[in-house]
Length: 229
Ligand SMILES: [Cu+2]
Picture 1 (cartoon, helix red, strand yellow):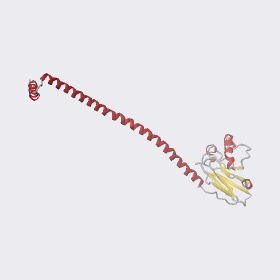
Picture 2 (tube, rainbow, N blue to C red; picture 1 turned 60 degrees about the vertical axis):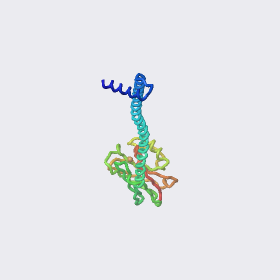
Picture 3 (cartoon, protein in one colour; picture 1 turned 90 degrees about the horizontal axis):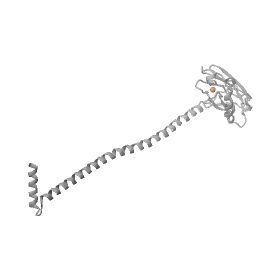
Picture 4 (cartoon, rainbow, N blue to C red; picture 1 turned 30 degrees about the vertical axis):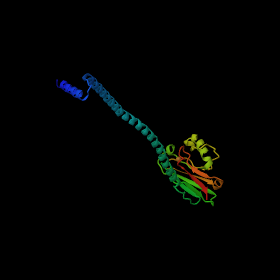
């Protein structure tokens, strides 16, 4: 009843203020405006809801491509980082130093770590013949960690290795009758020794000359230069 009285009072007030005012028109006017307001509010809420939903949906979408783009950058950087340690390893191999030569002979050592202890041999030009003594300071058997010393031109080295691979441990991993081989010791295991003597004239050519181990896979680590000085 109170609402009805308030409405009646409101109509009376409007009737006083507006000369040709009639309550039914006001009813319609109010209802129309009320509906319009409710619709407008509903639309605003709907838009608000939509605009609230859209940003979260857009943000993950934006985040995902960013993460995807950032991911490829890391793999690219890692290979570069992995490549770097290789260079110092090679440099360290080259930095082992020269073999000690005495009385036209030298002794070099191979280890269980698949390494020679020197990276270069300089043969005195006064020597007619030269002897390379090989020791194996490791403990592994010849079949697992065999070492030898093979001398050839640097150009012939890979061919000797490729064809020697199939020769087997009993043949020192060297092809029988390979004329590219200037000199070589037999293949030895831990605690064993071997030696080879050759005419120095054979390494006085154009060269360059290399000494290396022909056990499969060893030459990448076990090699060095040999020259007449
Ligand atoms: Cu070896």
